[in-house]
Length: 340
Image 1: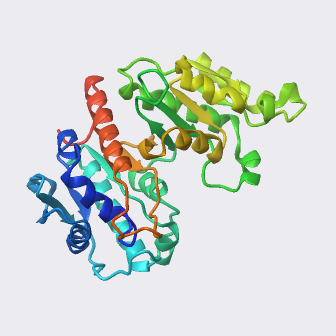
Image 2: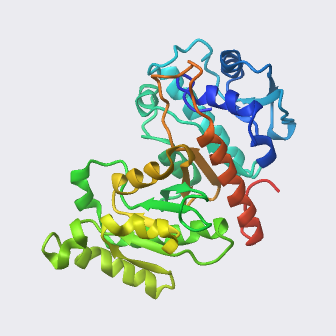
Image 3: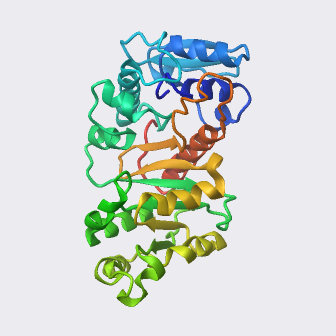
C-alpha cells in the first residue's frame, strides 16, 4: 500500500475496478483495511474491502478488494498529503510483511506503492527506501534497481531496462563511488535480470560513459580508460553480450533503435531522464539480486495531489504486468519463484 498519506491507497482503489489487474494475477493488498475503505470512498466505484488473515484467503473480484492487515498502528486518521511518522512506520510494516510472504513462497511477487523517505525516518526507520529494506530483509548485499519500460518502448519488442551503478547519492560523490567491481556487478545483474523478460536469450547490454564524448581519449576525464572499459572487458570475457563505454549523447538513441535490451548507467539522472522521458507513466522499478520478485511504481507519494481523485493508475498496472511476466519467464526457464 505504501505511505497512507500519499497516493498509494487511492491508486489501488482506482486501478481495481476498471483495469486488467485481476487478469494478470490474483492480487491482494498488504496494508490497512480502514485506509483502503477510505480510499474507496474517495474514488467511488462501489467495491468493498475483504479483510483476510492469509494470502490463501484472497478472492479478488471487481467488487471485492482483499486486504491483509499488516500494522498494529492506527493509521485511519493520518492526515493526507503530509509527512507523518505513523505513515512512515506503517509503510515499513507493510513491506516487511509482503517480503516475508514472498520469502515463505506464499506469494509469487511483490509490487510496492511509494513510501516517503522523510516519513520513514520520522517513524524510526533508518533505511532510506524500499530497496535497502528489501536487501536487508532478504539478506543480500549485491543488488541494484532497474528502471524498465516494457514493449512498446521503441526498443524492438523487448522493452528497455536501465541499471544504475550509483543511485541516490550526490553527483559529486559519483566519481568516488565508481569502481570497476561495481560496474561489472551491475552488468551481470542486468544480464541475469532481463532473461526472464526476453524469452531466455542473452540480453544485449550497453554501458554508458561518465564523461562527455566518453572522455575523448582522456582529454575530458580518464574514468572510461581506467575503470569502465576494463570492467566491460571482464564481463565480455565472462560471456556477457556487453558493449561500451558509449557516450551518453548517443547511448539511448542506439538503445531505442533496438540495438540493446539494457543500459548500465553510471549515475541516477543519466538513466532516469531518458527512460522517464520515453514513458513516465509506463516506467517500472525492478529490484535485482533478490531471491524474490519485486516491482514498484516509478512515481513518488505525490503529496500535492494525494486523496484528491487525480492519481493515475498506469504505473501500478504496468508494475503488476511486469511482475507477472518475470514470474512466467522464470518458470519457463526453470528458475525458482514464490508460491507454487
